[in-house]
Figure 1: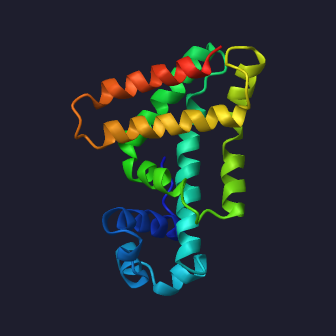
Figure 2: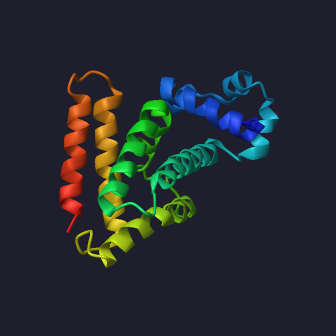
Length: 189
């Protein structure tokens, strides 16, 4: 049974939609309240200002994506299979949650990320970092830092999602597969 969204989650999801269609400036609090069907005071109860709300949107999207990737890691499969499953999970998630992935892609490079948000995001990534650390230790992956391997994975997975998600390129899925194979080739031992 699916749990109902809290008011805070409803506000964040609505804000995400508004930012995706009209940009940050296109999401005035009064309109956000109306579209979320909550009082303006409710928004300010949860968030001191827009920057704090955008940071919460980032952490919500990050948690959702990492949850999908972590769920795809079958500890009994080979490193190759686990990598492929993680890649497939990222691409599938980006197709069904394109707005979240697009927001993450943009916000990851933003100077707006606070040290606290960065720390929370890194904590969310720990199962994925462990996957790469274990692969480095077992020599399935090339030498290096597990965090660097994960960052390399993310960079290429986001690039592939952009290719497929825009729907403008006929060869998007083939290019995404080629990018997956190139990423695997660079990471494996």
